[in-house]
Length: 275
Ligand SMILES: C[S@@+](CC[C@H](N)C(=O)[O-])C[C@H]1O[C@@H](n2cnc3c(N)ncnc32)[C@H](O)[C@@H]1O
Image (cartoon, rainbow, N blue to C red; front, side, top):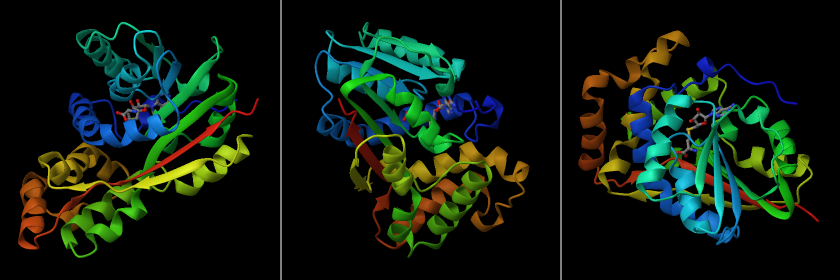
């Protein structure tokens, strides 16, 4: 069994501002996650387990796909995040979603699920392959595992001509690295699925680009979440300047170079459990 990691070491923390950031992120990435889940076969009547639910965006998305004849269980160890996820589900009329406070490594068997899903969760785990192996036992034969994780290297070429965006990306990647987080999940997913006894996964890489306000501000948003970690992890934020003015300076850099804004790469993988 994988060893649970101390919740306090989770690099993004559990502040209310981080939970708000997850909601903005969920709105921006929802269409990409929905397309991945639909292609992986999520649909009406299925029972879905969502790992690392946070404030519930992926669980709610899955709940819309499976409809009222299906069911979704969302798991997270952050009780404060789940306390926000539950009323969001109630307000959306999603009575077929429930949330469970648990470390993903401590899950014990329920009735096997038709699908196990997650967005931005395996990258935070010390041993994602061990977790994938455990998860396979929570899926019925013929059921599907589908994950969408980050690929920072596929974002970098989009901002190579933007010195401030590049400096922020470098600072964030180093913070993630020192915080024990993988910033490039492509091959981890590709190999990890197979090491967990699953078939070669179907893979997808999306790099969202647009001019929406949330996409123009997402990098600044993430710097704000990680700011308390810089000194703790021995990093200087000098290269990005005063965080109080960073949001405006990042947007100005886009405007002065007539550039679109890009999001972090989203690497998706799915495979069905043989049987
Ligand atoms: C970046 S957030 C993503 C939330 C959600 N999946 C989304 O896309 O909006 C990662 C979530 O994983 C949770 N998490 C991290 N490690 C965990 C673990 N070992 N067990 C359970 N939850 C964990 C965190 O508390 C956080 O809510």
